[in-house]
Image (cartoon, rainbow, N blue to C red; front, side, top):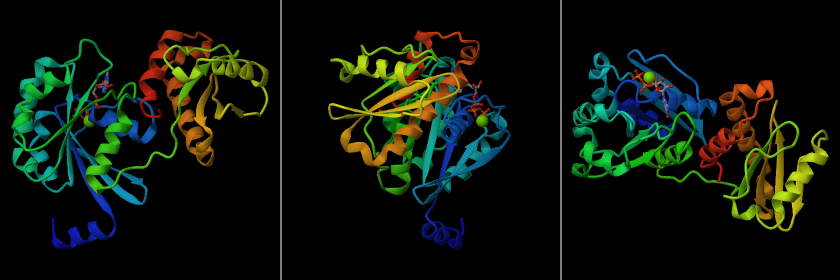
Length: 298
Ligand SMILES: Nc1nc2c(ncn2[C@@H]2O[C@H](COP(=O)(O)OP(=O)(O)OP(=O)(O)O)[C@@H](O)[C@H]2O)c(=O)[nH]1
Ligand SMILES: [Mg+2]
């Protein structure tokens, strides 16, 4: 990296993050989840691929490295130029942990100087290795510092948390959450709830019933908001589903953010459950997917 490059990066608020990890860890799937808000299948990365995101005025260049052995020689050079390095591991593939450890430690010189974030991916699969197991398997305690976060690039579990951490490492600033949604419910086309209230405390005491009856009465109208007992409830419709999100009254200045988050969730559900096109609703699958994705909204 030349001096000109460094100056350009400082003044244009351009930051670089590099994602390394064995082939099939899920690196490209993560980058595409961040961009599309859902899971998309990709072919293996040949060499490396640059993706750019603009977040709160900062241009983030994400270098997605190919993980096949032929391409691993490229990692060190790219990692040396980055402000933050991510190492992704397939937490389900225990048989590859020792190979992953060897490759991680080939980059050790880099981690003496810059932050390492380990993403333990595929947490939707069972039986997945625990975080403690992965720390031991990769010998992470020997590093001066590291962070490790469990995620799933299939269900979206932990993706926003991971991204917020990356953003903080890159910029020294916390990404602000402007709303604090308190509960999410998803309904089928007929207004029947597909998710339950039992794991969402705030929905006890009549709120769930009120939302249900509102949905049935106004499903075919343009109404999309309800105020009740200090809560603001936003409704959103997608092709085959409807969703509601409960906010507190104080969030009312940032409704757009809640609407966007809910739309993304519904889009993800439609994408992951193509059977709903045929009006086949599997409520346990939807409940599971909502629970996984909700970590990005709640
Ligand atoms: N079950 C599950 N599968 C995942 C997850 N993330 C990725 N996959 C799958 O894992 C396979 C590899 O994903 P990629 O994103 O292409 O992996 P990669 O790390 O980019 O691989 P290379 O480009 O070869 O280095 C694909 O079949 C993905 O669908 C996840 O969180 N859960
Ligand atoms: Mg890839």
